[in-house]
Length: 173
Image (cartoon, rainbow, N blue to C red):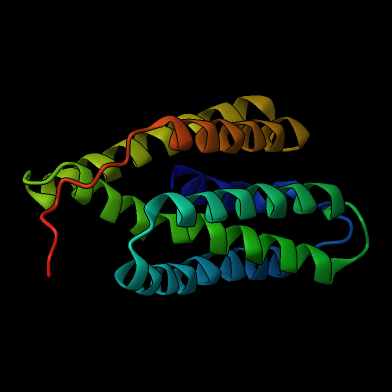
């Protein structure tokens, strides 16, 4: 979730200024954020229906890795439509992880207050994104920062699959 907050900060630095106007970079950020909102809504609906956190989390993280990789490869090309598509897909996958993480946090910390779990999750996301933005500023938001984000997503999918995701909520009939 913290990656969703971090990436839009550097969008104008990821694409070459010679071929991308500031308005086009603004549209990239708008599409990234809008796709995240739409993805959050859809993920919430899917979770309500199927409640399969691990499968959905793996799909979203794998989608984020693939779409960020495509963005990384095509961002310097002249194929602007492919850059828009890849960054929109990245926003969709990363933004969709937000309701999944809230539901998962509430599920595995039951009977703890859901507000406490959500607040701790948001706090850690803010800390993570602040650290990533600071590191991105030091690295220069180009290939090195994209490599860092890509590596963090790979670590995230590994840790997500190693974690115990047993729900402690009572089963409803």
